[in-house]
Every structure is written in structure tokens, then in C-alpha cells.
Image (cartoon, protein in one colour):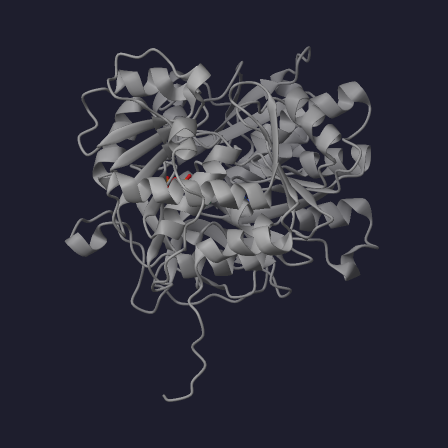
Length: 553
Ligand SMILES: Nc1ncnc2c1ncn2[C@@H]1O[C@H](COP(=O)(O)OP(=O)(O)OP(=O)(O)O)[C@@H](O)[C@H]1O
């Protein structure tokens, strides 16, 4: 319609351009792979992204071409994010924690034209030599002095490329619904599937997470994403920082609690984001030092359920607020966040923590519903459990290459709802609580047991560091829960003590049939417990007469 306000398209290049123009001197600090701490401004980052965009032109890259990265959270990775998408190509972040054969499969599936890698991943890429069919070149993200000797011919040096390119580049304008980046799911429950983000979806998502009351991005904030830029764009943080003028602190490859503590302390980090397994070690480092990093106000925890003990440890022992987030690769990722409501502030600690272990309320723009097995909507009464469905401007509508007829197990319906595969309740205030993934629920004697609830109860025991509950075949009840525990260092919990502890919190028939103490649990590429693997390993465990609990009462 004539006169309708259309305006300019929402493009990723505009984020960094705005950051350079308005918050030009704000810092990006990164622990570099070469070991030193790198520090520069948004203005400099923008200039270097322009140099890289000119380099992509010289490579003959065209709109829509995929450019892959295998890299930690660092300043060069940040530049690639903006240069590739800003140029009109697609930034495909590869997860280096996947098996080399999976990485090779994904790279070929995406038909990546160039690959940018951190020095750390040279051995990984050498192990895949000969399998990377679509690649025209590999760029090592380092300077001349650090270029490695390699059996791979023709490696390019990132800093040399930039030094030889102009920093004058006009970001092109195109449709905001064009593809900007590509990420494959973690592969926790099956083969990784490709999710293609657009400029529009990325911009809207980053605006939504940056808001005050969500992640509070501003010139006063300093944010350290522990969540990797190689999986779901570090939850959108590298996109939300420049336009809000937020200081960005990149941890590079050092993700242990001591390194994170030191970096947070010296850089005045106010907020951080990561999966629960990361925080276990930061909490240890905090205990050893007797305090949290001086400016740390809150941590965002997501990727898997946050145990209540973790909320307590952060808040009561160290005065750091916990904000739990829920999301998926397919949802950019953030769908819900749990920020304590004003009216909940005065609740007794335990009652408030019960609310905080819920996955939170939907972000502006997102819609949620829970449905029964027939697809009928269930009430939001905090009791009814059903599969969670989500829709919104940053929820993907199909998997990558679905248009070519490739079936990747599409979970989108015609009305725009995406089936998450998570089972949840939604209460009248809008709080979502994930009770389990559909595949992890335990069906015992026709009734459901939530593995997340049992794990949560177990990690409350003072001797327990990590817990995983899986359903194991049972001759009478079909499935029964088996609990695996990684004890805290120097703790020697025994089965009876843990079982007595659980008995006070869950129904008797939920009690695990056996409890096994292990040194570690298998973690997937994004730090989640690989329950598939545990189910395979322990599938016959209860047929060996290890059961100790009856189903009655
Ligand atoms: N705060 C949270 N609490 C509980 N579960 C969560 C939370 N955040 C994310 N999850 C789980 O992580 C899932 C999304 O994970 P992601 O997209 O990284 O890949 P994946 O589902 O693990 O991999 P794949 O789809 O390949 O099996 C959600 O569906 C949910 O089960």
C-alpha cells in the first residue's frame, strides 16, 4: 500500500555499524588462543570486519554461500560473524566437540566454501583431510608468526588477509529475511539437524534478550558468554552487545572455573551465561576464594535444567542472582527466561527457589502452548503436563535443506507451531516448567516419572556433584529409574543415605531401583548428559537382579 512505512531492512551489519558509531570506544576483551589478552574497541572491530568483507569479495564468495568457522569465543570469530553475514553470505558455526566424522558430515551437508579455524583445531582438521569436499580454502585465525606447519597445503593466514584488504566497505542492502547464519543441533537425541537463521530473526532475538529485566544489556554492563559462539551464536550475546554498547568479554578456550573467575574479576564482568556443568567449577573456584568475582550480578543458566542446589549456592553463598533460560537451536535459542518477579522478592528463600528452578516466562514475541497426545491444548494451571509447542519470529520454520525434499524429521506444523520434544507444565503466571524431554521420561507401570525432578532431588544431597536418571527396562513395570551419581571430591555417599534423602522428597514408587556411583558422566558437545549413551550402557542392568524398590504406594 502506498505510503506504508516499510523502512530499511533489519540487517546484522547495522548492529556493528551502530556500535562503532555510537559506542565506538567500548571494549571487546578476549582471551586469545595464542595466550594473551586481546583488547580493542567496537570501532576497530568494525574496521576489521570491513577488511574481512573485502577479502570475501576477493575469494569470489556470493550471497547465500556458506562460510564455516571452527573457533572459540574470540575477537576474530566476532569479526567473522559480522563480515560474513554483513556481506550477504551465511556464517556456519561448526561445533568442534562433535566427532570428526560428524563435523565432516555437517560441513559437506552445508556445502561450506571456506573454513576459518582457530589454531587449536589444526589437528582436528588434519584428521579430516580428504573428507572436506566442498571447501575451496582454509583460513587459520592467527598471525604470520603463529602460522602452523601442516600437511594441508595452501593454508591462508587471517591477519595477512586483513592486512592486505581495505577497511572501506559499504555493507550491502538486501531482504531482511535472507539467511544470515547456520547452526546444527547438538545431536543429543539423534543426528544433528541444520537450523538457518535470518537477519530479521537474529536482530529481533538479540533485541529481546538485551532488554532491561531480561539480560540488562547497556553501557554499564560487561557480559561474558561462556556459551560458545560455535553453538547457537552464544545465545545471541555477540549480536546484543554492540547496539547496546555493552562490553563483551570473550573467554577463548579457557573455560575452567579458575580462569573464568580471574577474567570476570579483572574485567568487571556483571553478567555471564552458560550451561549448568560450567557453573559447577566456577562455584568451586568461588568457594576457594571465599567470594564471587567483585562485579558479578547474575548468571544465566540454560541448556539443561538448573538444579535447586545451584540456585541456592549462587544466591545464598555468593549473592549472585540466577536467571534460568530455556531454549533450543531451533528457537535462536531463547524462548523463556526466569527473572525473579518483584512480587516474589519477599517470599521465603525456599519458596522463591522453587519458582526459580522453573524455566521461566516467554519473551516478548514468543507464544507457547502445551498439548496432549491428540494435539489438544491443555490448561495453564501448573498441573497439566503436555508437549511444549512454540511459535515466534525467531523460531525456525523448517530444517535446512527441507525445501530440497530432504526429510530431517520436521517438527513444524502449518500454523507455525514447532514441537519442542519437551514435556512441560505452564502455571497461571506463565511460568513454564520442563518436566522432561519426551525421550527421557520414564514410564513405570503405565505412569510417568520425571527424570529431571529426580535429578534435582538427588543433587540437593550435600555429597552429590552431578546426577543422571535414566529409564531401564524392567520385566514387570516396563521401565524403572536408575540413578547415576558423581560424588563431590572427597565425599563417599552410600546408597542408603541417598535413598533415605530422596524418600523425603519424592513418591516411594519414584525411588530409583539402583544407585550407581561413577567418576564421570558422558557429556555431549554442548555439555549435556548423553542419556542415550547411558541407556545403552545400562540397558540390562535391572535384569541382573539389581532392583531394590517396589512399585507400590
Ligand atoms: N533451562 C532448561 N531446562 C531444561 N532443559 C533445557 C533447558 N534449556 C534447554 N533445555 C533442553 O535442551 C534442548 C535444546 O537443546 P539443543 O537445541 O542444544 O540441542 P539438542 O536438543 O540437545 O540436540 P538434538 O536436537 O540434536 O538432540 C531443549 O529441547 C531442552 O530439552
